[in-house]
Image (cartoon, rainbow, N blue to C red):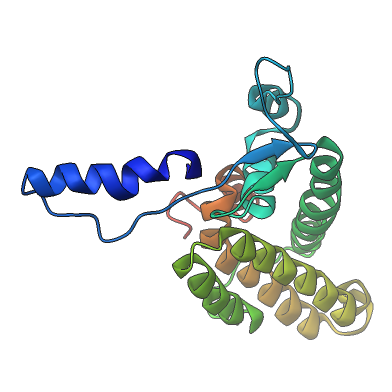
Length: 213
């Protein structure tokens, strides 16, 4: 924490030098988390109980908010209204709706994950963004990029209109849904980083084993 960086950046290295112990090569300093723009304090009662949020929404939504909204090396704010907006808008409507519509269409048309089916090109693009963001400890940028790609995935589905292909072109329907299923499968490793419980549920929906196969 930035309030004790003097100890970790000066006193502790001095103690290590005196003891002839190798020094750390990097020192990571994080900021504060405020609540509704005000400093959290037990004495003032300005605090948020994480276990209450986990009980109400689940642990992944709390993980998502903290990793998306709180910059790793800067101050960040926790706000219930913003939390609910992200929960409904990005987790439920964007990611949840995406998984539900793809899996539902695949089940209805008896299509399963096929190893040779291609994936959407933006998965590779996201992989580069993830590496760049994580290397700089910009975890919030990595999470935002992930959700941006899920949003573009939803838009791609709207463009392909697989619900119309059911009536007009069964071959194209199988190809399209196979690409969608494989793209969801390709995103599981990334979901496991930020939303591990959600990733596990997606594996079950796709009929994959614990190894994702």
